[in-house]
Length: 132
Image: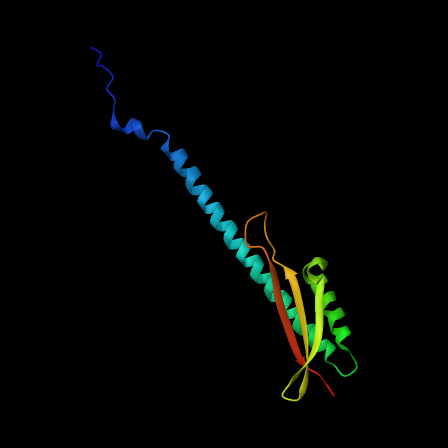
């Protein structure tokens, strides 16, 4: 005797594992891309700050000049990241309680993967006391 086929509640969920995998996989991929973007942005920012500070120290030496500090900063940024990040490097001499201070400023674009993320620029600076 053949029993008639009956619809069972488990049949409704057939194939849902594939859909769940795709949805969770997409979410994990977006989160991973965001974490990588943040890590890259923080790395570039820290590198720019270090290069600006090193350039300011170099330019503040007795036998150097503020222009030498700018050139040193551009050289360091070009070797550490990319020469495109070293396009806008400036130096100024300011006064801090009667002591001259060399300030090397760097403006560089944010590293953005694709079209996602904020647009804009970093603006970082390094300072060093000028030798007399």
